Amino acid sequence: MDSQNMSYQAGQAKGQAQEKASNLMDKASNAAQSAQDSMQEAGQQMKAKVQGAADAVKNATGMNN
Image 1 (cartoon, rainbow, N blue to C red):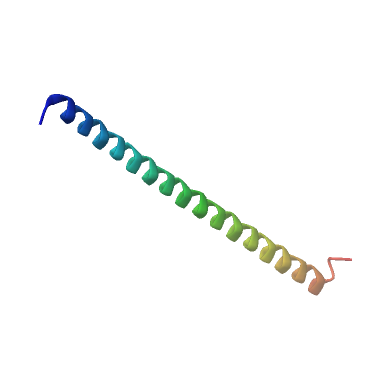
Image 2: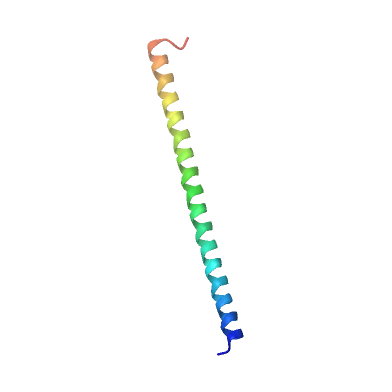
């Protein structure tokens, strides 16, 4: 195998490794974004439940008039 062919194959391997690394980074970023979205949604749901409970207490005690 001549040096030009070896250099070409080394470049190919490097390019493939960079592509795989890029894909892994994209997957990790997407997973992090999905987790963030899920947590934000859970937080909004909790906020709504707490507000509903507070309103129920106010109504029950007559403080919501």
